[in-house]
Image (cartoon, rainbow, N blue to C red; front, top):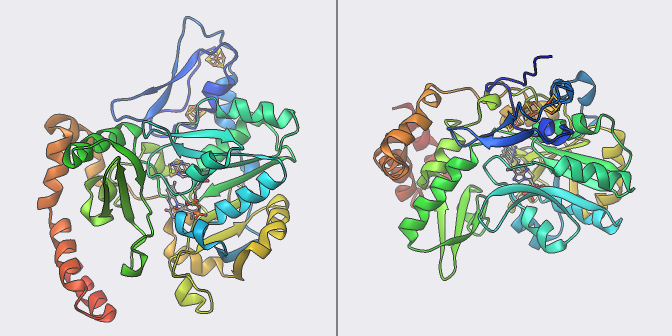
Length: 397
Ligand SMILES: Cc1cc2nc3c(=O)[nH]c(=O)nc-3n(C[C@H](O)[C@H](O)[C@H](O)COP(=O)(O)OP(=O)(O)OC[C@H]3O[C@@H](n4cnc5c(N)ncnc54)[C@H](O)[C@@H]3O)c2cc1C
Ligand code: SF4
Ligand code: SF4
Ligand code: SF4
């Protein structure tokens, strides 16, 4: 039998094939762009075909469900809301599962600022799961651990990108009652290798080791952005708006995403999780009765399991039914993947050729950065309406 996994364009890096291999012949290895891909050790492989079978299952029609209810929702606990990326829904659901003696699987930055999935019931580690990390998280061997905990009868909440939820479901082969899954509406992920280079570049500018990184800090929320990066060193903290950061901009513009993200099979309204969470940028216009100032989530309930969870946490939320047709207007990744810009052909090669420092510094001479800087400098002196008009004029130039 010839063992062939998905090609580079379609492999999401979910790592289900690696976890299922009975002889540990598969390891996830960094490619030249810094993304993890499975690598088969032919000397160990016994040609059982399990990896191929599981990989094909990650796209099975049966794992998708149509949302049955759609809401705008906000965690009433202000402290947790302010530490979350959007409406703090993950924390509400995680707290409930913990109260049922369950465990939570989600993404943290480890001590080396590498994003990885862990399974835990320790509140300090669950706190670290809060906040979107705009980089691919390493899920290697997490599905194995979840499967064994589920067999012991533990209730498990798994949260992650849709391809990770699909990887878990394919690995398990069936959906146990004690598993609850949350998928995120997903723009795509840059590579861990690129973030590592970025952190080194920022450290050299800061002249200190970065020990904490948040992409969605809310401490300047009144100034009207949720895309504020917070870098914490031992004795200083720096706040950087997304337009001031080359890594953040490349991510938001979809220039450096994993190849599979541009043809993502999960970028549609049918979802793989029991529950789907997303930002809900237009909620304040559609639902003026909700106080969306500190963040609001779009919440899709896709299964009966999802409905049961919502009924248990509803009293912890400010929640209002909303319309999927309206939500998709501000949420493109609910209906299509990000388009692949031409710059994606050369961005990683370019960074390799000229070095990360030179690539990152060149961003500050780009027209995009200069336009944002002009807008920002005059932004504080003018009305929001005039600012919007000006933005339109500058963007059309
Ligand atoms: C890479 C990425 C891309 C996203 N793209 C979009 C988008 O295009 N549109 C949109 O509306 N929303 C997107 N989101 C989701 C959004 O940013 C919020 O995560 C979501 O609204 C939930 O927010 P919250 O306030 O409930 O919880 P939070 O507490 O902020 O959510 C944290 C949850 O996200 C998980 N998580 C964090 N980083 C990662 C990661 N790198 N990989 C896997 N899981 C992770 C954690 O495990 C935790 O469960 C994206 C999130 C990520 C991580
Ligand atoms: S199972 Fe996941 S990681 Fe393995 S080849 Fe398929 S998509 Fe890639
Ligand atoms: S064919 Fe079987 S032994 Fe070989 S890599 Fe795949 S799962 Fe492992
Ligand atoms: S865009 Fe699709 S393939 Fe890429 S990380 Fe998100 S869910 Fe996975």
